[in-house]
Length: 164
Image (cartoon, rainbow, N blue to C red):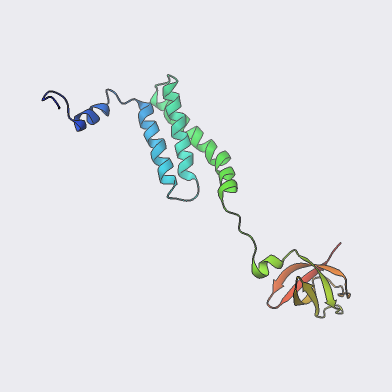
């Protein structure tokens, strides 16, 4: 049972967060955690860079450098460095790769000519199990059974290059 002189729960919490017991690294740590939590709701890893800057400032205070101007400078430097060094890495690693599908997946595939065509004419190629109308990108004819590579898809025909 609680004594009448014992502080209540809320009094203990408010006493814990007075400026007598709250150091600068506590504030920087709260900023870092808050920015990391907000980063989960936004894309781009910008707030995570701010979080790393706040961790840098907190560690500065923990190492004994209690000058607020120095902590702000470390916050800015670490944020700047993480924005230009860490953010591109995180975006490359954590952004999902989009695979080319449907006709976009045909670009770059090597196929065989099934119907020859003269220069500027329309022939056909077999890509997998499908037959496609084909045109050459350069001034070359499509020779029967030669190998060509799909450069792009335009409508219902593919534009092909010769395979070197």
